[in-house]
Length: 86
Image (cartoon, rainbow, N blue to C red):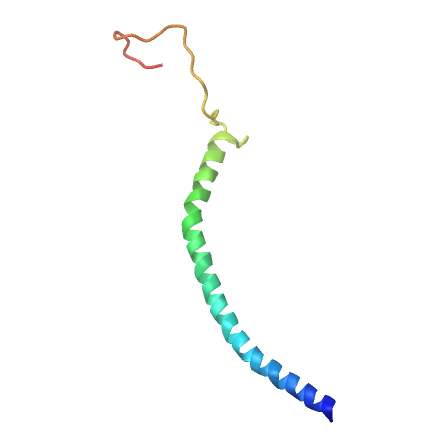
């Protein structure tokens, strides 16, 4: 008799605990959806910036690929009569 009472208490306790868990899971799903939306809004410009930079500097298929931050050196020093910056 005692085992039956314990198992009945466990079953009803599990049923009572499961109902709030289902409601909490739905709240978590909405919160997770909102968090994913906010992360997308925040991170999409960063992704696009990185993709554009990669396309311009790293992608081997790009024929107009540029070096990143090349150093320009010249043999003469600019003065006031020069019209072009080095």
